[in-house]
Amino acid sequence: MAAGPAASWPYSKLFDQLGRYLVSYMLVHNYYQWRHRGAPPPTLSALQKVAGASPRQTAGFVASLRAGRLVTVEADPTDRRATLLRPSAVMIAEIGRSLRLFVEALDRLDIPSEGIPRAARLDDPDTLGDLIARSAAYVLAHGTLLHPFPRVLFFAQRDCGYPLLTAVIGNHYAQSLQGAAPAPSLRRRDLSDRLQVSVAHIGSLFAEAEARGWFKVVAGGQLAALDAEFLAEFEHWATWQMAHVERLRVENDSERCTT
Image 1: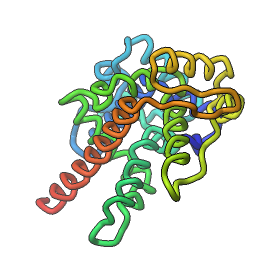
Image 2: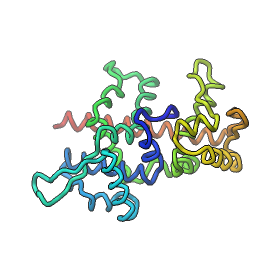
Image 3: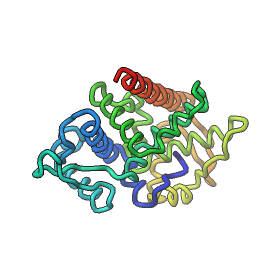
Image 4: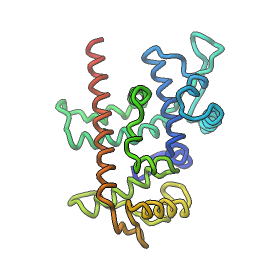
């Protein structure tokens, strides 16, 4: 996650902020719930009811997605007057990136008995899109998995804050765990270039984290301190994500068997 998205700028900044992410997340949900489960057509009006943003903000953001060819419109085959919003494969990959990476982590921790990695199935955009849809349906019914973790939420609500947080956690693991992957750079300029936000924005996030006693990054991009409770919260969040996607997979496989 800290390495940055495969898609180029400005996709990372479009999606790596919670409010914009949720609009996109629910757009994918609406499309696949309609396509696979007979939900109402995925129109702008339907999205505005579940997006978590104002109708005006939602409409403006969808217009930006359409301009970037991340969302296309098509006519409803049952009602030619209705305009349906369809997410592109690039958008699905970006919105599903964190989910897919948690599935990859789960594959390492719990090798599937059938020998086929769970994450391999998610190379298909429609399979990943349907996973996002089922995850969003859970969120609509029970609330987000993120809000019980206020420190993770703090970063997710800021532009590219969540990828920055994963860079910090990855840097800690690289220093403390034998055989861990090389540390992602925490130099402000390196993070600015990777995440496509200003150096000042990176510095502001670092300063706020230090003021709250969560972690401290010193000159040269060295992680000088990381609060144990902060790390435990991130790890708890990570296990919830892995348990969430595994539950969705098992439920989906069960549904297929019964049908």
